[in-house]
Length: 189
Image (cartoon, rainbow, N blue to C red; front, side):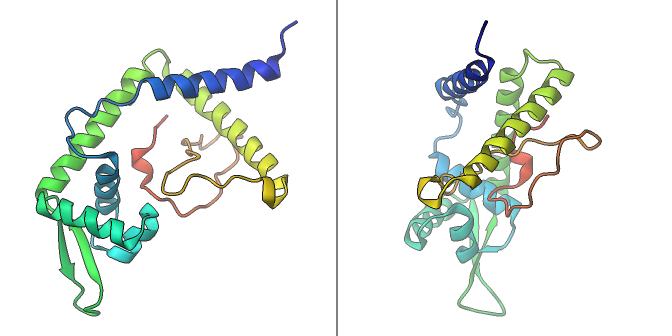
């Protein structure tokens, strides 16, 4: 008789390894992933302040300043001084930045479609529900651990990912969180 508990965890680990071995094709984007994250955040939060961007991206102000300087020199973003409080700098996407974000989203959607092509729509929905259930269960186990044993989520990343939940199913509603990124850049089921 097989040990199903082991099989479940091993299957999750195998999937995680496979995803790391098959990263998205970024050849069309000649900039680091951090620049893409910056553009995604600015796209989701137009006229965001530099301070808010630091919090969303979980980066030091000096690091953000470098990223913004490069993005502005490339013509991807514009920085303006806030009319009401001149100490605040507002960041918005330029037309060129919007085009890049659109291309990144299209590339990501194509990548996700290719990676999930082996599933029917029903299987995708079932897979998301099972992943949510297992993730919620493991998170609840983590919350029972002493503080000294818990590992916080990696800063600056939208993980653990929240998969879309069924509206009418028995799937519990997701816990409210301040998202680091807009939900539309996560895998949709």
